[in-house]
Image 1 (spheres, rainbow, N blue to C red):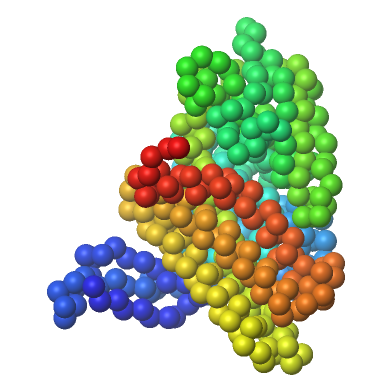
Image 2: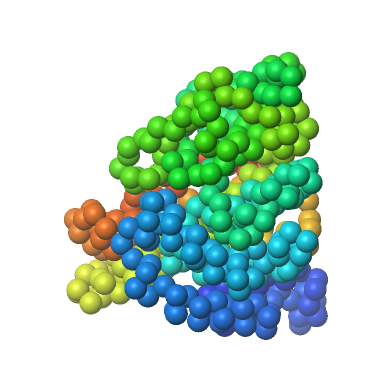
Length: 409
């Protein structure tokens, strides 16, 4: 099959095999070029960022999850909403303008490459809002979607537990029905942004019968609900990265349940498919790699074969992650069914973050360990890369079953 690749932007739009004319060998051309509309949007977005961020996007404000970052994210997301750019891919009735999945990709690439000024709100627009659109009641949609579309709310996800970190179907947090309320007891761990969140997308067990994937429900819970305790967890990854959630006789109205009782696993699996590639982390890794290489060249640290090799491998890994990510976007743009591609892209992104961290260590040496140095952010984030949005090992298991068709065991 012939391949035409036109490099006119950082990314390239992947059209489907068979859409283009046949090449000289009888195969279909695959076009890697952004549409004029998408390119124009990227240009406008970059101009906005060049005007808005200088003098503001620095220090603690640029530390994802910090209180300063969360405060600024409200300003930034509000401005994005005014431009119609915060939720462009959403349906018009929910505050969007039905933009293509590719325009949403442009948005993610540009914002993640500079450190994600939307702060924790990137989760809202990527998968929490769409999950509420797909499964929420009219009242839930009226309450939550306008807040997300305005950039005026922070969410966290209550998924992992101390004894069920990588296997969500083993969760033990219980929600017992008492009249028109659930009484929730249990705990969650490694929850990002909980200390600054207004709501929690919470997984609970409402029935112990059947398989482990059955009997799970989703609750949309205000974090100021009595019985909802948040305990920050200190770590070397970052001051604001993790929290433990403890629920003690927390009463949650049944009206806060998202989707049918006991059928929340289907709701969550759909949401996770969006979460795993909702953040194009490879874009940030690739940009930071470029900046570290520029530093190394300026400081005569980029003249040996070992450095050249590791940078080459890091850049190639970022490129592979980008193309696998685009395969997922292509599926969404065509409204195709689920596949193993989100897990493949997720694994590639983890590998990209890790090898870029290795390149930073190689080029900057001990200087990369200096807090807030050019490479420090990448080193810290690479430590959590295999945990966030579904663990690396779980994604490998999914790939073995869904892509390689290997048996369990």
